[in-house]
Length: 125
Length: 190
Image 1 (cartoon, each protein chain N blue to C red):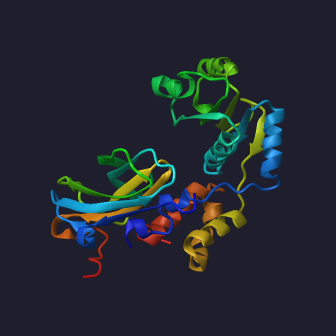
Image 2: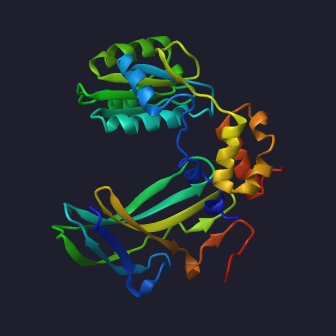
C-alpha cells in the first residue's frame, strides 16, 4: 500500500560503533497489513566476485500493530570489522524487515569507529 | 577507490537485467508455452543465460508457477542432495524447474533429471550447447550491448576504458566487466 513506511533510527543518530558496543534505537512503521516485523543485524561484502553475507542477530517485534514505534537494543559482536579494499568491502547494516518491505541503515563497526581502509586511501577525516 | 564504490562492483552488475533482442517477452513466453515449458537457453560463457533464466523465473512465478531453481558449477556431474532437494522435495504439479548449467551433468544424471521432471509443470535449463532440450533462446552479445552496459554503470568515461574489451573477451560480458572493475580499482593495466 502506498501509505506504508518503515523508519529505522539509532539513538543520537550514531552510525559508527566500537566492536562489542551496544546499539539502542527505534523502529517505526505504518503498515496496513503487517503480520511480523523484525530488526536484523547483517554484514555483507561488495566488490569483485561472489557476494557474501551473514545474518548475525535478529530482534523480533511480536504482535505488531498498524502504526507503532518500538525500541530495540542489541550488542554488536567483536567482528568482523568494517573495511574496504580495492577488491572487496565488508559492510554492516541494520535492517527492519516486514515481509518483502525492508529499511536498511548502514553502520560501521570497527575500532575507533572508523572503517579500515586497505585501498591506499585513508578517506576523509 | 573503495570496492563498494567501484561502478563495476558485482552488486551493480547484477542489477543489470537481460535485454532481449529480436524477440519480445510476450513472444518468448508464448514460444515457451508452445514448448510445454521444457526448453533451453543456449549460449557461451558470459552471454546472459543465467540472467535470462532468473528473469524468466521471476515472470513465470507471477503466472502461478512455483519456481524451483538449482545451479550447477564447473565439474558438477550429478545433482547432489542439496540441488535434488531444491528441485524435487515436496513436489507440486505447478513446479517449474530451472536448472542453470545443465551441460555439466553427465549423461545418466541428465537422463534422470529429465525423467523426474515429467511430473513438474516445466523444465528450463541453460546450456553452453544446444540439444539438451529445444532451444527457446540463443543468448548473444554485441559490442553495442557491452558499450551500453558500460556506459550505464560507469558513465561516458567508462566507454574509453571499455575499448577493445569486448573483442578481447570474445563477447563474454561477465569477464569484460570484471576487467573494467580491475581497471577502476587500479589493479590491472589498461
